[in-house]
Length: 121
Image 1 (cartoon, rainbow, N blue to C red):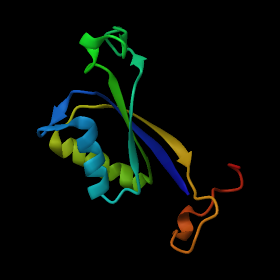
Image 2 (tube, rainbow, N blue to C red; image 1 turned 45 degrees about the vertical axis):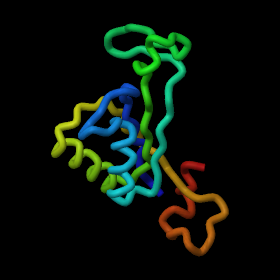
Image 3 (spheres, one colour; image 1 turned 120 degrees about the vertical axis):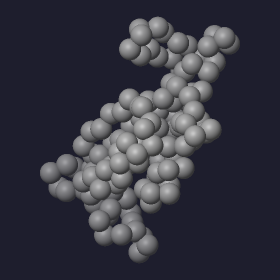
Image 4 (cartoon, one colour; image 1 turned 135 degrees about the vertical axis):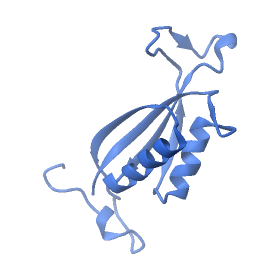
């Protein structure tokens, strides 16, 4: 199935509506019916201010980045973007094409996620 990687990069301690942003994004993605999402904590990194943050510094423990990732159809991506615009949530994101499928699918898997086009494999 054709879709996209939709990745959001947020600070570990940033909040929206009283919740951590990474947690809020996962909850919202689930409510929107997206098949799955994950959050990954960075070991080290830098952003637009070019300050290197590393997990080993205790005083910087909440300044690291969390990547929240969804693999979505274009319709699902639009639902997320619409929600973020409505809620006025300011986030940095990356969006890139992807093919996704289930290896050795069973009867409960929809036909649309059973294989990628031959040109991809």
